[in-house]
Image (cartoon, rainbow, N blue to C red; front, side, top):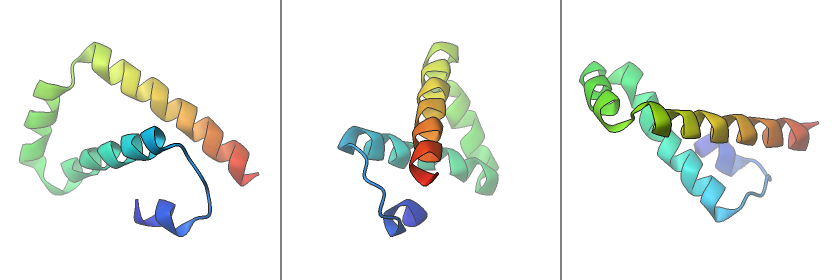
Length: 66
């Protein structure tokens, strides 16, 4: 989120909140025990929704940065 806040890009508050939630996934690399907790929380259907939203935001970001 630090890099995002340093940009001049504008996003709706719900997208910003979603990106902040996505920060929890970066902890997996630093804290291996955290991985087990993530697997218990995020089942297939929820994970697919998250992936879909990430793809949408990626597309929007790419368009804004062109």
